[in-house]
Image (cartoon, rainbow, N blue to C red; front, top):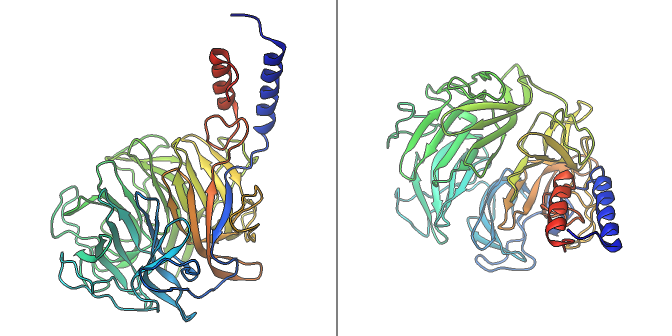
Length: 481
């Protein structure tokens, strides 16, 4: 190898200094305010059904559900929020965002509407799910939108399964009545008579084979009792299968040994957890809320993984209501841990890192409230990447559509989120802190890649992994450009 030139030596030293300095001053992913108002409790502007409009925007809401299609269009259904008249309640409106404008696609522009089921399995222009919030959703390989369960304005719970094929809603399975018990059948055996009980606040996944998975929530067990659930279900497109957990409410977790899978391990009953699936097809679960009627409302920050057969307790405590341990912003550490929380949003980036934003939970001081902290989990350690380690922060909006490193949504829970084909997170609305009280939002945000100097692997962290990539590339090919 020929000796280094003076220019090459200067470049090498410059990058080394840059990487070592930047590793301790990481802004994390940056947010852009894309659409909607920066004010709270706004009525929806619906326009004409089926027609995109620059003035259209869904009303402020929380606890809706979302999908994203292969054209990177964002879909939003229902939730609890404000209709065209500024009246709040349960919604059943379906919206689409094409990157510039919103379109009101289906459903009513007023709150608390009943559903029209038609005949099971038969599409109809008149079919539509009733108004609801805190449902779960999936999107299949054919770009059909799927919707399960939720709660209406009266607190009744649903266990109906719907499909939207781009033109029509189709009632697929489950009852058209509320507050129905679960029919569990035999664990591990699919059956046409099986159906999860009516519930809200569950979490969901889609595995590598296109199966839908559903865990827990607050609802009806197999014996007609209502409470927190820890049952795990799989839907193969035809039948439901009870896979894990109990068919009775309010079960405690069986943690076993941290890091060791076991057939007896199972997360405790909970609602409002956070879920994601990794590139290997493992299902992940973080935190959530435990409601013991007449006793207490508590939050968790345990992390679990399900490999298709067994649960593994991966990290976090097996006790309730723990503070966040933030460490230094941008620096991963084995002691770091988001505080106990629920109603957060999450996504996976192209490097299989898990990202977590906000929710209602406990900050670094042990105070409960609306959070706007952004975290990354790399499979081993947590990193506090952006936002505050103190509850109830107001948002920094900047200028609509203009990037700024200081932009960040305010503390909030129950937002709606999407992940586009570039791995960017989108966030809409939620219930948060406006500086005086908790209110409902209708703002749309996009978290952009950092595009940081020295971030060669694109994970928004400049660290020794980036230095290794740089050094290898530089020695083999010269300074990377």
